[in-house]
Amino acid sequence: MSNIFDICKVCFTFGKSNFTNMKSRFLFPHKFRLVGIILLVIGIASILIIYKFSPSSNVSSTSQIISAFSGAFPAVILGLTLIAFSKEKIEDEQIAQLRLDSLQWAIYTNYCILIMCFFLLHGISLLSVVTFNILTPIVFFIVRFRWLIYRLNQSLTEDI
Image 1: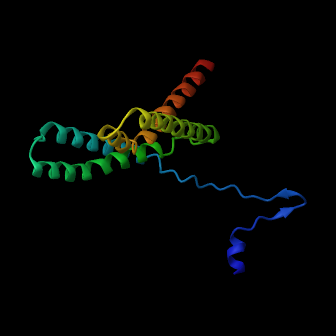
Image 2: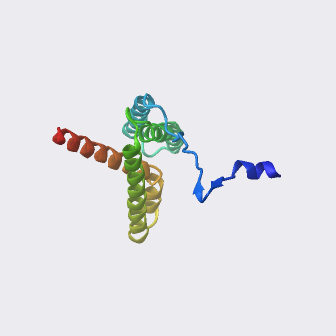
Image 3: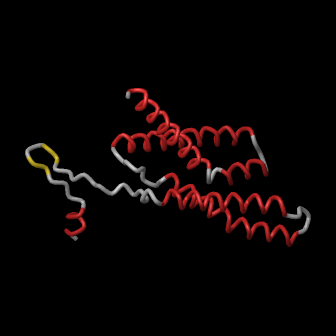
């Protein structure tokens, strides 16, 4: 029973904490961003092809569309996840802070929009919004994070 507490133990020496800094940030290697972009393009292209060539009235075609989406939608989700959570070429404390700020901003923005949709939409349109709400936090995060990286790079080039 004491082994469980040994894992969570924090040692204090003369009032100062002796924490170890974890190096693991749970980010994918930088190479995975390209894999994510490829998966995202394949998934979006699959969804567009499904919409373009799907007959609208047949019940069997509806089941075919749903089965096609079950393959395309996870590719989009996985692609966005790999894009969002791949390391930068130079990953430092400032980039980590930009990631945190972007993630916080994305969650706040997403839930503000979702709350407004709950008050303004009803029925099937609300169901569509909730379905696409699976993707919106990570899309907001990617857009915000890339924008902050762009602004940081612009400010660094102006200083030179």
